[in-house]
Image (cartoon, rainbow over all chains, first blue to last red; front, side, top):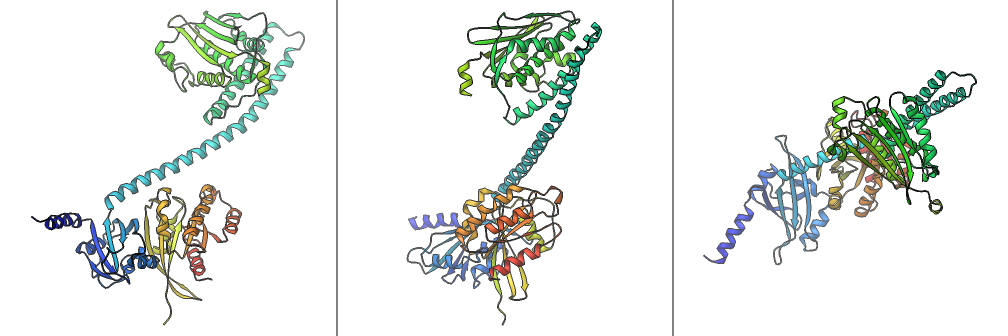
Length: 376
Length: 170
């Protein structure tokens, strides 16, 4: 067989595909030839003699570009994903490419029409899904913004009133002649107000963490005083339930931190300890200073935490197998918030626990350094 | 014999602002609540009669609103006599995008008239774009503006008619 025959076979294979059609239009863009497949694809009869733009309205307005192309003056022109509603009601997609004539050929253009319905439909579905996702994402972002705003307004209102209640509690405690029982009741009241304040602060913190905007306002912070305050507010009211032990250094320990946030850390650690310590068992709290760090711990005896659970303890919404088994209430957010706050202070939090024995949470914070204050 | 004008009008704007719905309302007089994203381009036709000018054939180019297709939009924009720049009144960011579409059109068809259209006027409860915002942007782009509802049909005829007139220098 001669090369020409092979070439012809190749051309036949390439050209006679059911999704391809060809037309030839003269320099005035009037169709002079259309392959049999063209009428089928476009569902139009008698193509020859018509202007190209009559058959393909997508080419209205670009006639000058195409005429220049017919005179070899332009590169090929293309339109992708032309949508056509067919008489059957279905939408088909086409790609249209218009080529200048081959060197030495009569002036005119070659029009290649390709039915791309299969890929077009896939692309449309993909595009549709992506756009729907974007719309949903936008709605979620708006809902989130609204939630943050509502939370900020509500917390402002509530914390103002809680502050007032705490003030009156302190004033009452100064009254002469209060019985021991009344003092204890005021302690419980103060504990309740502080716990509510902390719960509110937890919500705000979580919202800020979620937005990547946890606010930390640093000052010189006396950790010894803070530890004693937390002891008084959260542990003294439960002194009859547990055996409490406190270890404090002689000298005060200072860190460069946010007093409210660190108070929140202590609240979370103590509230976990009181929740998981069986009555009559130990809760120990302590503070010490090393060369570079302040080291603060809260420890409780009891069921402890399994090594498997320890791996996930600081992840949001994590609940230990014991919590599930004992149906203890909790959001699984306390330790997550602790970790975020401590790390925002340049510190770290560690857990040491032996199942059926004890759990000890230790936070390490960089000590206050006067030069650090200058850098802030 | 009266002269019949034929003009190519492009619909430009972000995805899901209602470009296809506006064309469907204008051409077929109906509205469909389902969102079906457009890829590529769909050309529709409608005749309009303008008292001062006579009959006019509009070829409406409904273009995909997703950025994936904007890179090759210059071919789609060739020969456009004007464009409706459509934003969704309930999504403020879709109005900010209109500058980008105006610039693209200007690059391919300098001086082609545009009309700003704030669509989904019927969703007044969740509207995020004020008339004043549209007015300010329209002034910046030296364009006219309208708020429409493809759902109720409010101002849809007016928007296309206004652009048709502008393409004739009106």
